[in-house]
Image (cartoon, rainbow, N blue to C red):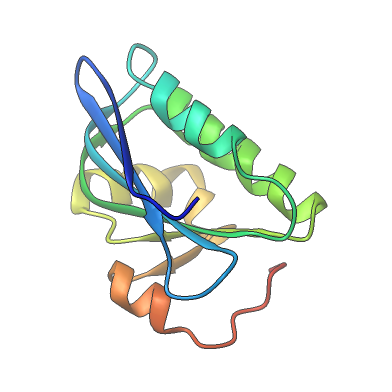
Amino acid sequence: MTEPTEVTSPRLVVRTGPGDRPGTVVLALHGELDHDTVAPLRAALSERGGPVRVVVDCSGLRFCDSTGLNVLLGARLRMMAEGGLVVLAGLRPPVDRMFEITGARRVFRVYEDPGAALGDVDPPFVT
């Protein structure tokens, strides 16, 4: 996908755009990710297949519940099985705390911001 797109639910906006090099996609999340709003993220992640690097920009995410976490974890496993990678960037304190408490922060590669994730010139596709 080369053109940016935007999908919304009542409290979540997911903007999809190209990354810095072929095979990299950025998903920017804005709002609250929960049971009622997860559909746009699920759809955006299911479009990805094969050896793709997905940078999930969480800097606009104010809240994430277990449903959102499970969608991200499931996408991570699926991408790894296909030779791809899902990384997180810009976790804000409330969301970061949830990832830390659940142990999910240890299974994702987490970057300070999307620029740092995109600047990682040679990340392994499977971590």
